[in-house]
Structures are given as C-alpha cells and as structure tokens.
Image (cartoon, rainbow, N blue to C red):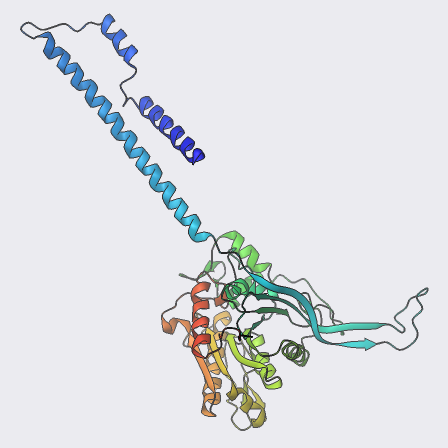
Length: 429
C-alpha cells in the first residue's frame, strides 16, 4: 500500500509539473504578484476597483479549476491503466501444479550380447553388451489423478517436446492435462530423442529442409503464412518450432516402436493413447497388441491405416505421391472396434487435388481416414472424425494441440473424454 501511495504521489507531482510546463497552471503566485507590481493595470474612467478585482479573481479561479480538472483526468486514466494491468496479470497467473509423483524410465528394447570375453585392461567390443531400442518415458501424476492416464506419442521428426511448452511459450498438452488431473506420460520412441540408443547403425546427415516442413506442416507456403493461421508469426516462435525437430538415430522400424509402447502399457496398466501424425498408424497397432489401451485420441494420423482382408481401399493419388492402406487379418482388425477412437484434422486441407504437395498429401490422408472410420464403424466400432473447419474452428495447422487456440482444441478433447466416460475420478479406497 505504501509503495502504491508513493507511486501515486509521484505521479501527481509529475502530472502537475507537466501541466505547469504546458502553461495550464498559470505560474506561481509570487511571480504573478511581481508582474502586477512592474506592470500595474490601469483603471479605465468610470470602472471601479471592485470590478477589476472580480475580473482577476475570476481568471485565477478558472485557471485553478482547469488545472484541477486535468489532474483529476490524469489520475483517473492512471488508475484505469493500473487496474487493467492488474486484471491481466491475475488472468495470466496459473495456479501451482500439484504433482504427487514424477519420474522417468526406459521401457521395452533389447540387449545385444557380443560373443567373446571382455578384457577390462584391453577393452574391445568382445564380450560386451548393448542395451538399445527402448522408449524413454517422462511422467507426472497429479494429486487426485483420474483413473486413466494419458500416454502422448509424438510424430515424425519430433520427440516429447511436441507435448511440452509450445512455440509461443505457453503451456502445451503435458501441463494442460495435468491441470485437469490426468496422469501424463510423454514418450520418446525408440531411436529418437532421449531414446537414441539404437542397436543398428545409421548415418545422420545435416540437410537444410525447414522450409519444406513449413509447408508440410501447413503453416503456409514459404515464406508466407496462410491468412488466419493459428500460429504465432513472431520470429522466436518459428525459431522454437524448427528447433523442436530431431533426427532418427537408427532405421525407422514400426515393430520396434509398437513393442516398446505396448511394454509401457504393460507397466502402467490401462490408459488412453494420444498420437500425432506418423504415430497414428502405429497407435492402432499398439492397441491391437495391448488391451490396456482403452481409447485413442489421434491428431492428424498420416499413415498406417489398417483394413480387414478383402476390404482394403485402392491407393489414393496426390501430387506428393500415393497413399496406400494396409491389410490385416479381420480378427486383429476387430480389436479396434472394442475401444472409442477420435481423430482430429486441422485447416488448410484442400477439398480437391492441388499441385502443392505440402497440402495435397493431407487431402488424401483425410480421405483415407474417413474410409477407415467408416470401415471400423461398419463392424461395430466407435470412431469419430472431426475436421475442425467443419465445426467452425478455423486456422489450425498440422499441430492443433500447440497452435494459438490449443486451449480450445484441448477443450474438444476433454469434452470427448467426458462423453465416453474416460475422465473418471480415482476410486475411493
């Protein structure tokens, strides 16, 4: 309170000084009296001294009132700005996260045992081991966590950073859903990010490619952003965006990834799998391998659409190349009909073929996803596909969960989880 009063007092003095400098205060009383002595006002014939005095008094009174009026206006403006700033700070402050438990671990993977005998004094690869091809998992469990945690799996060229702080510096899905009392497990798939220990070698080259991904991820057509895109167009956001990409450290192997994530569900029990892009197809196969996957939320799945034998659609062509579906035994496919699944696609996906491969590849992926939804539902499944522009949400990129409106996108997911009974509170002991 004292600091605030001090600031207000200083502000008043500064306001008066500014007003005096502008000539609105009329100067000091001493200065005015001195001027009167040097330049006495001459009284016209027939005019009384009282009238002259009244005139000067009225002018001084008007000047004083004018000064007070401007000071009051200045104080009101200052108070309004201070109040608005305080309200904004209050809105921007988040409640502290209440974490019951957090940690990290490796899961899945394999061990190579090299033949021979290890000599610690003359070390060679003989007789040594290599632990690799595991997934890395970081987890946080909030106080009073809901029954089913969320397992978040990144897409191609990404790692767990996908779900953390988003490019414009705000909270990502990891914290958003912790605040909604879900346990959250974010993974780095085998041979990526913190799970970089591969059992097979691969050359990693440094190739400039970021303008290509700018288009593929549908921010725009380089160097221009799409009008109305839900992505911060400041240089730092784009800098953070490009720095969230990371290479494979070994050959891309779907079976290795599926086994590792299935092992995670063996370890933690029932949960909800949240996938993005390239992990979408691997997510279906993980659910077929491990029934602890109780639901799937998939953002813009890009490949791996599985269909039962005899029901595989024809490849769909595009300017980026064709997209082909996968055929699997019907008994395996039917496992996907046992869990609820929701799929979300963002904006800037053309309805008809285009020569821009960055956009056209998503046209055929959305088309294939619709065919896949229809196939699962025809066999008794529960798949919902949401094309965001069709429900009135415009401007989203390939990363809806980290766009400017990510809270709105999170609310869609929360609503779906609640509708499906997947957000139940912990059981009472």
